[in-house]
Length: 507
Image (tube, rainbow, N blue to C red; front, side, top):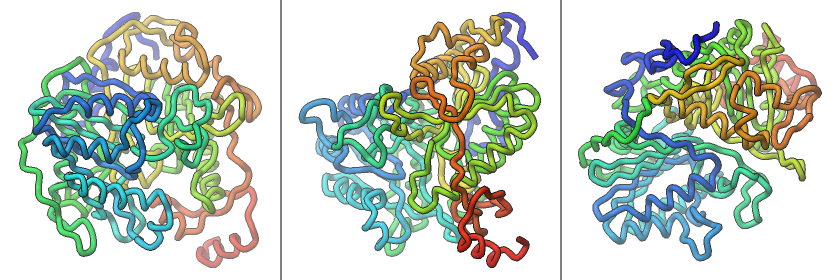
């Protein structure tokens, strides 16, 4: 179906894309008059945050929620003598800014102390407290399966002025990188030579709702861990969030049921928002995601491709957890096979790698853009776990400002925010100017095509590695709950095949 030229159709309105009031736990269910800005890659986010922290007056608040924070990481490592995150927050505490950090508590301390990614939170929490701030290691999660606090957000509040950062980037080692992805120096490198990710900073009433999300979690009366007491509650009133721009924003979450008194039934609005957006898509769906595992989105993406929607998936080339790569390959292969089942010509899959070195650019972003009208940026992966189990946070954005765009050769009204984000991302991945990417449907010819491994700039035609193992039922319930273990396998070891048969008599 095509739009009439420059018509402000129902597809341009927030009600067309956003969830209903009964599907989210916030009032109002979305807000208008917000100013949202996408921050692509860690260098842009870190520098923006550093500048805003420096401006905070006495009496302001800094609320930080994270999966992992590295105390020794610097927000501006390209500047001589720039402070570490812990030191910069300590300076704020010293001048009367209230600093609070809410971090994931790894459930197995002996193992956590051996692995830097889990030890970091303990070290950071201690340094925040030593410098006058407050920090909580939060383990208020499901206990019947591995779970994590995966929300990545920073909220800065000075009186009624409030700004919130939401997205996929943790303030930890290895996340700082530029759009060139030319390779990080050893001092900044994590597990990968290059890292692609996206955050969004928003001002206005939506930022107030992100502040409220942090406050609800912080004020949860349930002890955050064994032998731990809840911290002193936040008693400052919710900021108003003055109107700052033209974006309509819906704040989305994943919270497991039965964990939080403020959400006894849980909340799965991120998964619902993705589902609705996919079902409403008319022209294209663009997803950047670390995993792309089986979830409620799989069948909807297949149906979208079947009705003529172009589906573009940009993913990570390889899984980062040693020992689980083969299972990850199996989950991805199953998902892509299903999405491509009805109309494979409408589904394109890519990963990113450096053009010169051939090294992987680890893609960690979690976002979706639909029809140049809607953008969702957050912390949730395309997986059952992110939709139901871990705590997650995302922003769904429809711009109140419409601009002229192109869609398959026809002039249409589109959202300024969604269109600008797509152009920036495609320009970065393909190394092309905006002029040749203006029409997303015609610009699909700019992406590499043909056999796996074909590359244009950073974008590479993706093929799931053939080293795949069956996913035993126990492992399936751990890494991606609700997954059925009947996964087709290309290659497996005899030991794992026997293990799977023994644990699953139906095989």
